[in-house]
Length: 607
Image 1: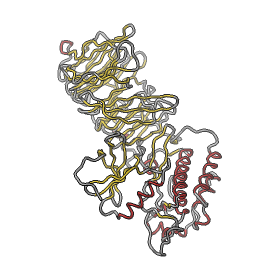
Image 2: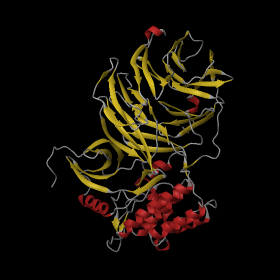
Image 3: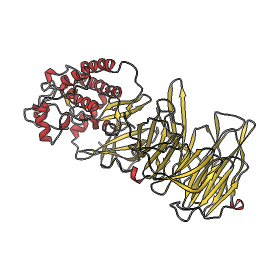
Image 4: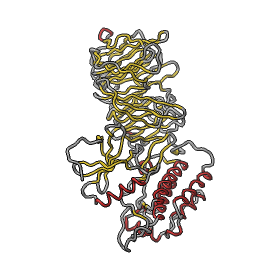
């Protein structure tokens, strides 16, 4: 009997992550433990017997390659299955990325699927709907772990369940074994589906395509064709897994698993660390870049920001402001004015109040930090620069401004204590403390996500266990519940269109770009053929560049748009307007500024 409503749920729903035939799947936080789960909503239209059957199957199938069901949660309009949450998305998401999975990774994912099926078959359960959409991915330091989900139409083996001929079928025709089309079920049905997935992973397409009726005829009558470029051990596996008669296929998931594992040792004899195959010949585009007229400096530019008609240039202890007639930054600057500080500029950021400049001066065993604000719409004048944070001495110091410039989060250490520090949040501009300081470990970065919340990164590499812990904090100076990823990430760049989307790089080789979406949590790896030194985030996506002038453009989902060769020695980079980059270069002891219009390079994947 359902409990009385209303009552406080054990889970806080954070967003919808999927829509199925009988309900939705939600991303949720378990309130008392702080971990993430998936809630599969089974509404009134979902038959009770099927609900109980799926729950019974999932409870009995405890295996690393099967998504576990943890509980049933009732709510006012139905019930949820509480499932493991897999932050890597589905296998379909991974297959549809612009990158091709390496052969080793593809075979590893297939062995995961077969291991999960072996467990299910041992319990006399036939999944009946194996397809990339029903394979979820859990992130690991080495790649992904594949987990089977959605046992909603699963059947017991024919020894336990006799179905009448012509009883119809349910499932996905593109991945269905021939006998499934006339209501027959066997363990071989699942192995046939795995064969289709393996074919698609290796060759980039399924063996059969078309409308459901075309697919049915192809599965029933058409022999598959495996190109000669497929290695013989894999070709033999595909031909056997995709036999029309189930008795000619592998006798069990274990047999197919052993064959795939053996083939992997033959076609990938040495360890391969590439998860995603890089393109063999990435085209490099040489674009037209524009030099800003009469703008040059005798020292390297280390910091760049653009605010409306102003360019802010940071060089050592000097801040230079270039003012233009309009935001296109064309023509000659109206003014070029400088302010000098007593300490080198560490960072500066643009906020509604103006440009906030953090300076750092090293002293014996410690450092001194100061925060200044140069107001917007003012003529650059040292008398207008307000010192927000007086000289602050600390061996280690991290800070982050919220996007509205109303509070400042700071972590600092005392007495050379490198393990823990004081976490404080100050209201600006009066610098009042909103809460007593908290003692916490030293993170690698503080990030202001929006006007209410921030994020702290804590990478840990202990005895080969590589993880990054991410903790939310609020503007009142309190840490909230966090989560961890099996990756080493020391810094992330939020996207201005959605500060809950962040891009970073793995700290250990091989280096992959990591795109994290927090609402709901999804982590995407992007293969790169160079290590970027500069990462800028814009409404359209991300620009990654190294100091030699190679520039890679990615969209908001991490898909590659263009790779550009600038032939510049880059020292700083920022975005401005909708589709422009401002780039600082250093050559022949001269620093110059260039602009690049990206519009023609952001639509190459629209075809």
